[in-house]
Every structure is written in structure tokens, then in C-alpha cells.
Image 1: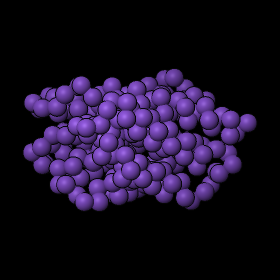
Image 2 (image 1 turned 30 degrees about the horizontal axis):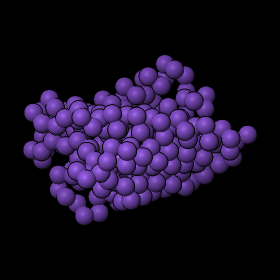
Image 3 (image 1 turned 45 degrees about the vertical axis):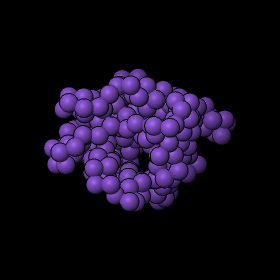
Image 4 (image 1 turned 60 degrees about the vertical axis):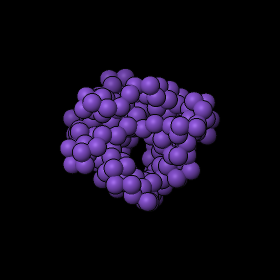
Length: 209
């Protein structure tokens, strides 16, 4: 149970940071988001692995480090954390939020950005937090947080910068319930990140061979 509570908490603070950054128009929002993830990874990495992302959990599952039942519980915990954070962000700021691609971005461009940076994130997680070769390192949180920050700075303006199905789905569902939002773009934040996580697991398998 403690692993699932940790996944809830970590995802909660990641998504809460995203919601507040979006509402406030924070100029260095991607840095705040990457830092939030880094902090939460250091907080809970030793308990749950610090995934806070169903695509990362999928990659870990595919490498045999989670069972199917554990994976399902991780995803539920992450989604609930994301929804709780989105609800509180909406309550505090009075504005709902949900990721969306740029109006002039093609679906293919947005999908590619979501796939590529989630692939990078999951591959970094596998190499710095799962691999036996790097066990006991002290830089895993920095590497993971900066990967998300990099993706948000580089591709956020194109795809919306979710790189995480919980970030793509949780706030969108809350936004719908509170009278806004749309499910039109949700598929981008499910297909792209989950495919990226699966591809990362395959590449990591080759690296470890």
C-alpha cells in the first residue's frame, strides 16, 4: 500500500505544479515542473520507484520489475493523484486546465513530440533508477526531472508537453466535470506516451543485453 500512496502523492504534486504554473502563466514553468518531478522522485524513489507516470510504469512492467496487478494499481494511484491535484488547482485558481496541442500543430507533430520525449524520459528512468549498473547513484532525481523540463521547454509549445497519460487524462476529466475541456486531444497523451514507454523498454533491453 505504501508504494501506491507514494505514487498518488508524487503524481499529485507534479500535476498541482502544472496546474498552478498554467493558471499563473509562470515564465519558467517548465523549470518548475521539472523541479517538482525531481523533488518527488527523491521523495519517493526508494519506496515506489518514483514513476508518477503510467508510461514509465509500463516500461518498468515490460522489463519485469512490476507484476500486472502492481502495474494496474500504480496507474490507478497516478490517475487519482492527477485528478485530485487538478481539482484543487481549479478550486484555488478558479480555472480548469487540460493539455492541448498548439492550434497550428498537426496531430502527427504533437504525437511525435509526446512519443519522443516520453521515450527519453522512460529510457532515462530505466537507466538511472532501474539498471543494476547504476544502483546507488545520487543523480537519478536530477536526471529524471531535467528530462521532463527539457521536453517541456523544447516541445511543450507544440504538443502541450504532457509526456504522461495521467497528466493528459486526469486534468481533462476534472475540467470536463467542472464545465470545460474536451476529450478531443486525449488520445495524443495516451498513444504517444505509452508507445514511448514501450519503445524505451525495448531499447533498454538491448542496452542491458
